[in-house]
Amino acid sequence: MEPTSTSPTPKALSVSQLNQRAKQTLERDVGEVWVEGELSNVSRPASGHIYFTLKDDRAQIRCALFRQRARFVAAPMRDGDQVKLRGRVSLFEPRGDYQLIAEAVQAAGLGELLAAFERLKAQLEGEGVFANTRPLPFPPRKILILSSATGAAIRDVLAVLAARWPLADVTLIPVPVQGAEAAPAMISALGLLNRQARLDPEQDVVLITRGGGSLEDLWAFNNEHLARAIFHSRLPVMSAVGHEVDVTLADFAADMRAPTPSAAAERLVPDQHALKRQLAQAEQRLHRSMQARLERDSQRLDTLRARLRHPGEQLARQRQHLTTLQQRLTRAMQQTLAQQKAQAAQLTRRLASQDMARLHRSESERISSLQRRLASAMQRMLEVRQARLHSAARELNAVSPLAVLGRGYAIAQDAQGQVIRRAEDTQPGQLLKLRLGEGRLNVEVKRRYKKH
Image 1 (cartoon, helix red, strand yellow):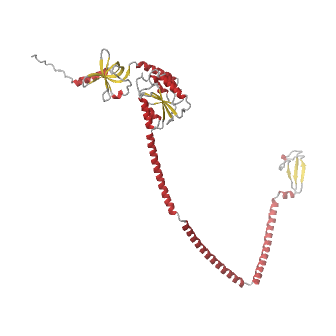
Image 2 (tube, rainbow, N blue to C red):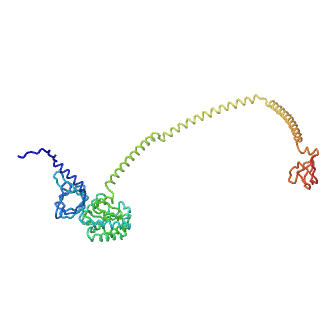
Image 3 (cartoon, rainbow, N blue to C red):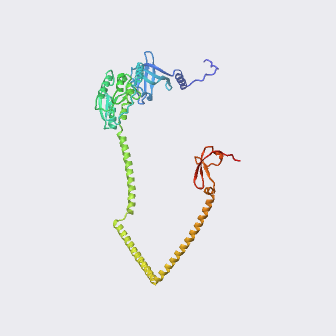
């Protein structure tokens, strides 16, 4: 037996730790890559994940495509198919299996098709072929479907239309949806529909649809002439080609795109069940509103009924009131008549007790006395007013300019009527007017004398 070494033994890793380090190294150093190879051992368990081997003539690698990514893959993925795969290099720790976690899978050779698709898309977009955004009639009077008569897409569309809107008038125009003859057939059918005068763009719509498939399967819908025919269509067009992730030039040229054939049918027509629910809700609201209105009107009617009286009762009350007023009027008239009779009797007695001749003489004497007093007062007032007038006339005459003229003075005025107050205001030869106490004179200035 050999002697044991005295140096310490290195700390060993567990298998899980080793696999964990290997996984981290692979994911960090290699990361995400594109790999091309042949599919083999393709397995689809109930979980929805897809497990397969990707190989070439010298090597192979285990691969896993998990369910959340598998639903976006259009490639059929059959044993023997040549594919391009994008994924992350990793390691399955429980078994130590080196594997590739796939993120996207496409058939080999798709790169050229995709490049051609992008070039044609850019060209048509630049020409305005993708500018259609006309509103589709809702619900349409006629739905004209261009699709395969035997495909799953038309069955889904018809089933959804029948369930949602049985009133839809659906016409299927069977056309091939795959292969070299598909695009010309769809172009011809679309042109035929647009030439029919009975079809109205305001009421009818064209649906172009098919189910999912590979890029090669859907390539007919990337036809340049089909895209132009859709753009120039008189009737509005909805396109629903493939699955949600599939996009074609027909989708861009159409007035509206739906992600799937079933979704197209749902967008084209209303849901009768939803409308029935809305109608039921509206009916309930109307019923509640009518019930509330009836209750309010019933209460109002009860109030009016309580205030309403029978016409016979109303007439009897008015008749009684009229009788009462008539009685009151009769009593008032009798009372007034009695008072007036008593007053007339009293006046008659007073009149009879008076001596009319003596009363007449007394009133005549009183009138004569008043006339004399009035004449005397008027005479005295006239004398006082005349005295006041003479006094005012004397005062007025004392300040009147005419009185001054009467004492021998005169007022000189020029031709404009201005009074001349100074000799300097005149000129020799100037004509003046003199106003005297009695009469007027026109004079001429011969000479001016200065004031000493």
